[in-house]
Amino acid sequence: MWEQVNDLMVGACDLHIHAGPDIPPRRQDILEVARDAAEVGMKALAIKDHNTITADRASLVRSVLGDGVLVLGSIVLNHSVGGFNAEAVEKALDMGSRIVFMPSMDAALTIEKVRVTGETPWLLPFVKRKNPQDGLTVLNEWPNGDRVIPEVLEILRLIAERDAILDTCHLSARECMYLIDAAKEAGVKRIIVTHPNCSVNLMTIDEQKELAAKGAFLSYAFLTCMPLFDRQHPAEIAEMMTAVGEERCLLFSDFGQVVNPPPVEGYKMFLASLLAVGLKPEAIRKAASENPARLLGLT
Image (cartoon, rainbow, N blue to C red; front, top):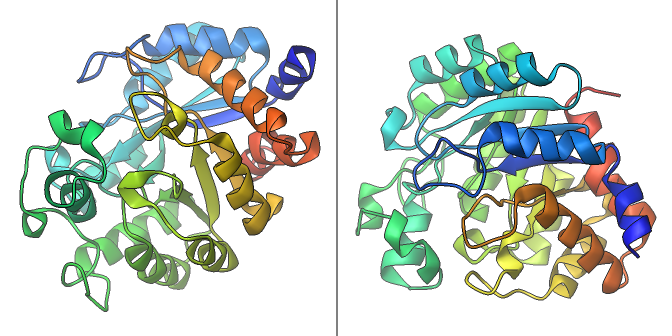
C-alpha cells in the first residue's frame, strides 16, 4: 500500500495547513513543512493562520526553496484582522495571498458549536466569545438571515477582481448557500467549502451535493479522524466523497497541531486510510492532485 501512497503523493496539494510561527504553537514551522512536501513530490501547499495573513512567510519560503513546491498564503477573516475588513483583504491580496477564508474561531456557528451545544469541545481553548450573537456571520442575521451583508459583498468583489479563491471556512451550510450564490454573481470562479465532515460545521450529504452543484469544491479534512478531535471513521469521508462525486472533491490534512503527526505525514495517512476503506486510487488522485491543480490554475 505504501508504494501506492507514495505514488499518490506526487503532485498532491494540501490547501489547508497550520504551521509556525503561529498561535497556538505548531508542530513544524512553514519551512519544515514545505521541505517535507518537496521531498515527496507534492505540488502545492496553502498556509492558514487564524490570526493574520500568511502571504509574507509563504513568499519567504518560496524564495528559499525555489521551485520545489508552490507555497501559498492566505487570510482568515476573524476579529484579529477586523472581521469582514475589505481593506485587510485588499492588502493581503496585494501581498500575494491566494485564498480568502471566511471566519473560523470567531464565526457565529463555531461559537454556537463550542460554547452552546458542545458539539466541538476540542476547540474550547481557542474560542473566547461565549455568545453566537457576538460572532461573525456573512448574513444579515444569525442564524436565519436571508441576504449577504454589504461588507462581504465588497470582499467578494475583490476576490473576483484578483481571481483569488474564496474558502467558506467555518460557515454553516445555510450561510454557504447564500454566500456562493452571491460570489458567483460577483464573478468569483474558485470556491472551496471547508471540512463539511467536521463537527464544527458538519453538513448532510444532500447539503454537500447542493453546494457542489453550485460549483464549489468540497474539501475534506483528516483532522476529524484523530483521537483528540472528532474520531471520525475515514469510511464516512469516503461515503461523502462518493456521493458528491470525485470531480468536486479536495483533500487536506488541517494538520499542524503538536498532538498530531507532521502535516505531510498526516496527508500520507489520509491517503492510506481512504485506500484502506475502499476508495479507488483514481478518485483519490482526482481529489488530491488533479482537482486542486485545476482550482489553482496549474493545469
